[in-house]
Length: 439
Ligand SMILES: NC(=O)c1ccc[n+]([C@@H]2O[C@H](COP(=O)([O-])OP(=O)(O)OC[C@H]3O[C@@H](n4cnc5c(N)ncnc54)[C@H](O)[C@@H]3O)[C@@H](O)[C@H]2O)c1
Image 1 (cartoon, rainbow, N blue to C red):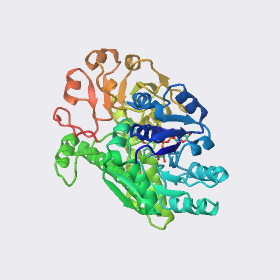
Image 2: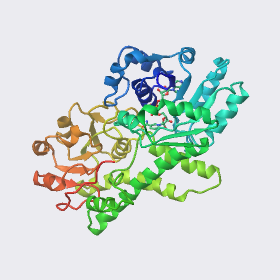
Image 3: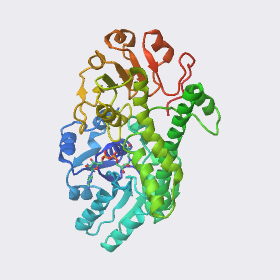
Image 4: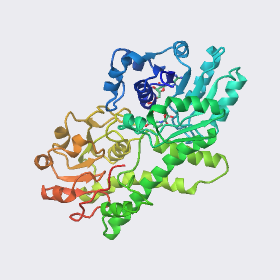
């Protein structure tokens, strides 16, 4: 089926990218958000998020795309409704489903004889689909279909991930609903798993929890490497050569952040706990990750002694390169810790230019300004703009050329040759030339 009529609810990182990609596949797509600033921006030709290639794709397929604040308008121009609203963590660590349930409420208010299929792309705990199904049935919307279709795209590479997915997962109550949604993806010729709604929901949580576990695992290996004089970069390459292990997600660093891993790991742990199962492994994954972010402060102290009154530059704020997403970014924890210890913190990022909620941080206009007179620098996000800085000439601008490479993105030997006191994560100075491939 080409030319389906799709309505997307939520114009965030997932909704906007998915909607635009569906339009690129030949479908007619209307995207709705409740945030007037986003919809106004989109209607004015602006893109409210930083995602490489998105602006160009929107322009290319503008005739099949529209943006609205109105649910009525959305329902009028669609047969399939893709839900991509946010599901942030609550204080307890459970996923907050209020936005998902608000969508169901709104549909019930104006749904009438709606025969739409709701396609759940938001990450929701196991059991949510069944809960939504009950709500729809109770509100006279029994004809509305429901398909769990978790999304696996990564910010910064979201378009390529959507267009060339490792798999499309569809969980449905009625096979004909799954078949209609499968047709939307037909042009991608992607591997497809068709299963039950709870199983599809679990695939998403289990996948993110496993990837987070891999990161915490290699971070702990890195920490042990530091104690015993091994080099984690070579260890990771050697491990990755084993096809049973694979190379992905074996890059040690200062911990995982972002809008998905922290909340999804916490939500799966809570989901298990609420069902009476203590998910011990995930408790450790979370704890290792929190400690990993704070280890940088220990590394700084090793070089500087007390950090009080020291000027420390943080390069990179976003939780990963290629995005402006600051949710659960390691930079927030690091800046907060350093400020609490009395350091002067100056930051620079190529796309993030403010730090909401962190007063007291100085925002530099350029990386050079951030490094000027700094007594140490922490590479927080491995943006190419940061990795490719003119490091040989910047060294003389710093008051002390201490660099903590939180992403193992720079070559230790070369940095030492240029006069830096370099420290990475689990690396032996002078021995490492191998870097595990990017995940
Ligand atoms: N960001 C990612 O990389 C990623 C990847 C895979 C899955 N997910 C999951 O996808 C979901 C969306 O994530 P995101 O990062 O795109 O979130 P986001 O915060 O960027 O976007 C969500 C959007 O939904 C809008 N919204 C909320 N309630 C609405 C309503 N009733 N009607 C219309 N719009 C509404 C918000 O205004 C916001 O613009 C989450 O469940 C997330 O876990 C995210």
